[in-house]
Image 1 (spheres, rainbow, N blue to C red):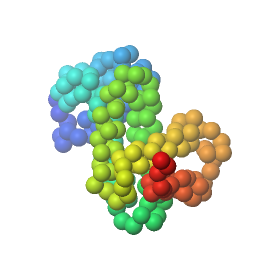
Image 2 (cartoon, rainbow, N blue to C red):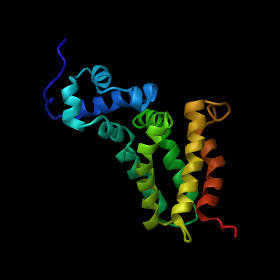
Image 3 (cartoon, rainbow, N blue to C red):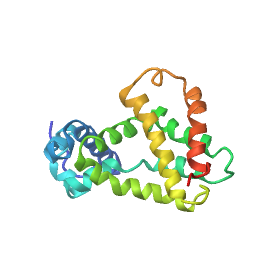
Length: 197
């Protein structure tokens, strides 16, 4: 079967297929080991189409690490509103992204890719910093809302990694509501607790 060279009507499905194939290749081979040709083959498109959409391998890699827009739309609003319940809102929104079939694979692959090599993390870091920067205009209390949000997200990423990547019991098998109930108080403390010193 001939590889697709031109744009498919509407264009977006092909672009998304390339991104998903790239995530899988970067996750298994790392940034250095992945090639545009291998990614194109996995997506069943001509390498020229990969370059058409993304330009370079670096730009394609950046696209694979973008936090899903629907994820941002669900997480960032939880940071506004009353300080009471802030930890539960953020915990629920973030952990539900990992349970939702619409976002789970993207979350898993993006994390695996970012953790796969120093190159990957170096390229992921600006995206993480940008996400953390969005907490400055949120309802996270002063002082240092960026630090508070960064600590809370580090905590949540750790919980998600153990549950979905390492699959360590009992976190792997814990009902979501119990996991949220047990995690949220610590996240609340990260976000609103008094700072030592």
